[in-house]
Length: 283
Image 1 (cartoon, rainbow, N blue to C red):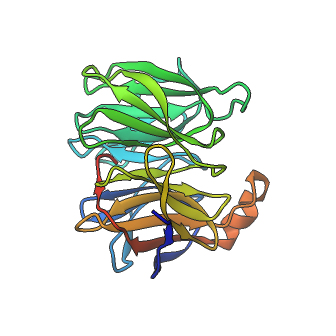
Image 2: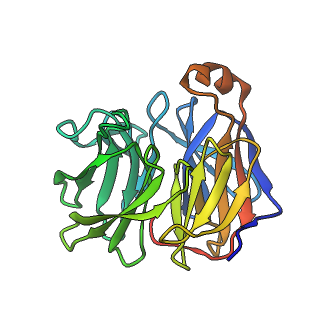
Image 3: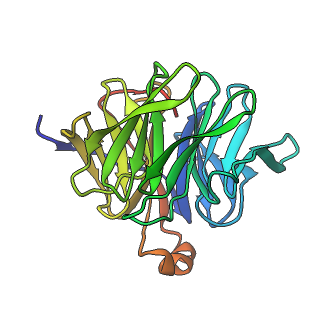
């Protein structure tokens, strides 16, 4: 199939700082608003509301347990209490010191990746599992800057974006939530995948900051479509009432040394476009 650019982009929300971890939840798109420490929800008409506050700084993400408890990464895995406090949810200090993406599967297992800042020659990325009973253990290692993660609707496959390796990597999920059978799901052909989501055709959408685009790719590496953007794409999420809206969170990026300047410029946006297939699985 010849990849086609997707038309009719719509700006849902503008003048944001850095936006990450988009999640369709309870009829709205929620996201981590880095630089403001806010967790924000926005509807399809652009009406937004600050729902809670996350950690200070950049690099944290959100997801929910089946009972509606919001989880948040940072120096560890935290949960949001009813009074708005973030409290420790699981001790992950034995596995890594920095934590990035969190994703909860359909059985209540939370997968958290961290150890991003190793090197390309000596990947230090890991994935930790926190079970519904609260047990924490490491289930994968040796990842080259692990970023977005997604789980297929049968709860049997976890896909993780390895940004420094330019690939999507897959694992089999066992009945006890352990990971095995590591394999390359798709080579992303020189693109650096960040946030990802899965659609009903079995394809993955991934965002790439450097190339300023979101790409739809099939297992094995065939590119099915792309959305070209005017600034870096940090993550994408299929949502809306029929899950056929592709939400993309974007902002200008010039490296960590330019973060203060670009935070002040407020170039962050939430953009939406109709997708060819609805979202499935988790997140």
